[in-house]
Each structure stands twice: as C-alpha cells, then as structure tokens.
Length: 363
Image 1 (tube, one colour):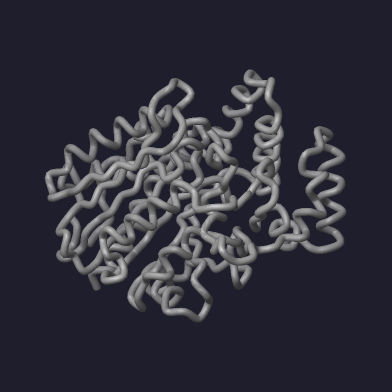
Image 2: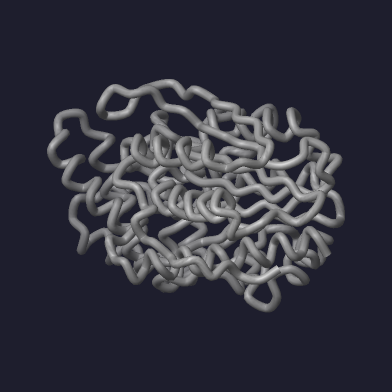
C-alpha cells in the first residue's frame, strides 16, 4: 500500500462547524462502498441556532476483522483540523485513489464534542474536557493538588503577575510538574481548564455506544484520535498512552516506528494525564490493537495555556459577548492556523499515518 499521491487541497479545512458537517455528510454520500451512518444529537445549539450532532459512518464489511477508527473533535475546536483530515481521506476513498485493504473496515467519527466545535471552545457546554472525562465516577476521582495551588494564578487578569507565579512554581517544582498541575486534569472546578466533569459527557457516551454497537472487543483496532494545538508547528506527533511495556505500545512502535512518543516515559510533548478517552478503547483492545493520538503542533505550550486561560476567564463572566467573540478568533488561530503551509503539512502527515495504520492492520 502506497501513500496516496492525489493533490493536497487545503480548501477541505471548514470555515465553521456547520460547514464542516455539511461537507462531511456530502463526502460520505460520495463513497460507493457499503456503509452505515449513525447520528448522535447533542444538547444545545450552535451560535446560529442549528442542532448539534456527532456524525459517524462505518464503511466496509460489517464483519471485517480489522477496523481503522478516525476521531475528530474530541476537543471541540480541534475539529477544524480533524474535519479536514477526515474529509481528505473520504475524498480519496470516493475517488478510488485509495482502497481499504481486504477485511478492513473504517469507522469515522465526526465532531465528538460538537458544542465546543461550534462555539470555538475546547470543552463542552458544561466546561467539561472530554479527554479528562474517562474516569470511574463511582469511585474517588483523581486528585491534582498542584492545580489547587495554582488556581488563584490561573484567573488573574494581570498576565505579567500570572506568568511570575507560574515561573516561581516551575522553578520550585519543575516544568513537568507545572504542566501536569495545569493540564493533567482536575475534577472540582467547572470554570477552570481541563475539567473532567462529574458524569460521562456526550462524547464519552457516543464512544461507549459505538464500541458496543460494533462489537469492537471482537476486532483488531487501529484508533487515531486527531488533535491540534500542542507541539512543533505543523508536525503530527504520534502520542501513545498505552503503558510502556504493554502490547498496545509494542504494536504502535511496530506500525509507526521510532516517531512514537510516550508521555509516561517523558518522550512526548504531552505530559501524562487523567481520564483520557484512550482508556475507553484500551479496555476492549486485544494484543493486536493500539490507540494513538495524532497531535498537530501549532504554537508554544505557554501560548496554549495563555489562550485557554483567557477563554475560561471570559466564559466565567456573563456580560462580555463581544470579548468572547474576539477571543474565539485567537482560539481558532491557535488550534487551526490560517496558514496554507500548516494545513498542507497536516494533510500530508495524516495520509502518511493513516497509511501506516492500514498497513499494520492488514499485515
């Protein structure tokens, strides 16, 4: 199987959630292979008053032994890049410039957090970060005491003072401890960033339903969760959160090579985190499956924290619609830069990694 050579077209990057959904549905309709579409309504509406939907399509034989899963919009606003990647791949399938290997099916999940996608936020309407939500809410929740130590600094309007307090914490505890404190996940502050919630969120319920509906525990799986906003500009980092010596990690390294990074070993741009959606899939994966996050870098981690903290500050207030609107453009620029070169890099790397996954599944 060779990397598709069709021209890369950055115009697949949508201008909005609604446009992304419309183009996605149209492109799915163009695929002539057997398919099943399932739609999952989400509470709330878009800023224009439209319904919010997580759309999914199964392409290929319902009895396929191997399944490639593509997930876009786990973090709402990151769905801009995720939509484009899925649209590009569906376009290749529809044009028969790319064929699924024998006994391999494709499950494409679009806009797993549609509210955040539509409102240009990373979380859902309740402030929940879906990628901190996969915890057992019947047991004591993960603790993050360092988040509490930094909480007052997170919401300071004075950026210089906030950065001074951050620098002091980092000096005393180290960079990894600082990033874990801010982004590792917390479960008591709904207004704050990286909040895991108190119950399963919409996207988690969708994933659990799909896993059951398609009997994923009986299949070999290659799951690629599409993200943006962290890491080197334009590079798609393959992040593996399987335990370092697990079968999942060995499969990831076999399929994707030395570019695989592991937060648990400190080799990734991401630190280890609580409640990742990965864990829902890990629980049903056999020894011939793996889950990776394909994370496309944009700007620095400090800028990521800065733009996210400002987003949460504005949404914690009630009378600043214009300020929120202006800031949403900064959010969009951080998570999906308006740069054709960045967009081309994203699409090329995605084709490469998807090809590696399909080679691995069919080997």
